[in-house]
Image (tube, rainbow, N blue to C red; front, top):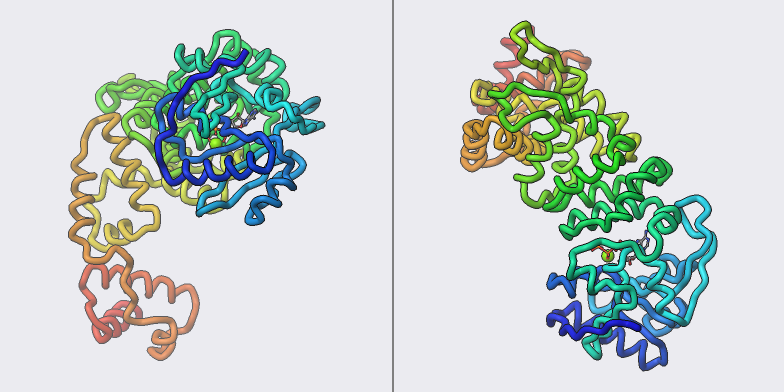
Length: 447
Ligand code: ATP
Ligand code: MG
């Protein structure tokens, strides 16, 4: 017997549009409900950011009712309906059977029994229905009770369900962290036992799950669970290895490198930028290979930034990062220590630094790095002040270009870059302020 609980949905444009869809589909003679994350969030008192639905209508029925829709996974019965500026994922209720490879179902059958669709979903809290006309949450799987007890429970037998789709183990960790729920002990024990199978998951899916965990206020908890289950050692052994890498107690009173990394996530609040999230996670991975003990028994990490940066391409390839993310991440790791010397930097160098594409992200990384170790914020404050007073952060246009240099009698070649580079420095330093001075500068310095 289903448990039913009345909850009125908070008024919003999203809800009004969703309600209209429900009415139209029901008028055409089909069943349709909200399902999944939106229902879970509603019961938890959070405002859902999107609404998925499950229906007995077939994809082509939905397409007929809403011509402005996209059949994204018609064979899985999923249609994206664009309606009043919102996009709704509407799935035909289905059963999935025979997962042979732990990645995708071999067979999908549509069913007119929506309850069966709920049984293929991952966790009880994600497998409830909401009827927006009656205002009823309809729970066939015990999700309401689990929300009350703050337990993440698998629908069915954990070993079977995780075995069907290994990604569910990562999802378990993501939801447990994000919702601040405990994973039901039997399910947790199964995750720990079956963790090795996670190496079979497609890298892109793992990357997206991990990124989703990191870009969340409870990222540190997710990392702890990833480590405890040993999934971290499979996909990111470089990060797993950071625990036990002891640091100087004066510069790093917080503890070892792993503790320092977690603390940065704890104190960062919600990290929305994926580059920042990955940078926090990976900025100190070079400390493990760079570790040395001084004769005074003090740990040193000479060159850990470069060592860490050199480790990034392999990680980027493993997790299929975009080229842009991989490059920006490698840069952030390689140069994360240069902030320590900004106060002594030449004006030109400082301006170049502040004009870099990802400067704001790297500055935030620096701020968190300090906040979670020595607590010194002078450099950060200095840079913030400088940024506020800067009229323009982009680099200025050069007074001379390549063809000007040719006219001045220089031969194109590697010297051009050198000349233009030093001219840029001179402009940034304000020693060259117009075209004439630029010509003089070049002639005097490059005979
Ligand atoms: P979020 O707020 O993160 O989007 P969500 O619950 O909506 O959370 P989705 O990944 O959008 O999660 O999936 C929607 C629903 O589809 C889930 O609530 C769950 O019922 C089901 N689902 C998604 N992925 C799986 C999976 N791998 N195995 C079983 N069910 C899944
Ligand atoms: Mg969702």
